[in-house]
Image (cartoon, rainbow over all chains, first blue to last red; front, side, top):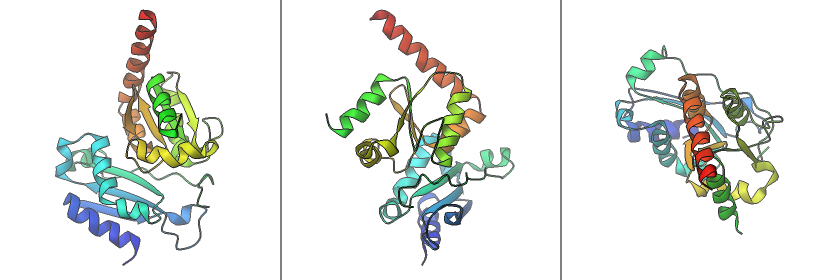
Length: 105
Length: 113
C-alpha cells in the first residue's frame, strides 16, 4: 500500500468522513520522483462539529503520526463539517507551489 | 537556554509570532508565504522566526506544541494552527479580530508595567 492509500485508510477509520480526498502533491515540490512527501487532505465529517479547527487538525495529525515519522513532510489540510463544505461550494483551495524551502530537497 | 525555552520566550513575549521558512519578505515555502501574507493583510505588527536560520528551533518546534509542520502561528501565547487554519480564519474575518485583541492586550500589559 502506498502512502496515499495508508492516509486514506487511517483517516477513514479515525474520522468516519462522509467525503475524503487524499492527493499526493509531491510532484509540485522539489523532491525526487515517488518521494510521497507532500499531501493534501480534504476531509468532511459530522464529527468535526464539536471541535475547533486547531483540534480538528490535531486529530488528523495524530492519526498520521506514523506517516510524519516516516517521511510525510507537508500536509495541506481542509477539515469541514458537511454544512461548512456545502457553504464553500465543495471546493478546497489549491495548495501553494514549491519555493524550494524544504530541508529534504 | 535550551531551544524549547527559546521558543517559549518567543511565544510568550510576542502577541503574534509566526515560525516560518524564510521571512515575510523572502519566504522559502508556499505555506509560510501564504500565512505571513494573511498576517500582513491584517495590519497588526507581528514577529517572525525563520526556522531555516535556526536549526535548533527547526528541530524542536514540532514537539513544543506537538504540531508536526511549519509554519506555526501563535497568538497570545496559543497555537492557532498552520497555514490552512490561518487562511481560513482570515477569509472569515476572524484573524484580524484575534490579532487586534492580542495586540491590545499586550499594550494594556505594557501600560501596567
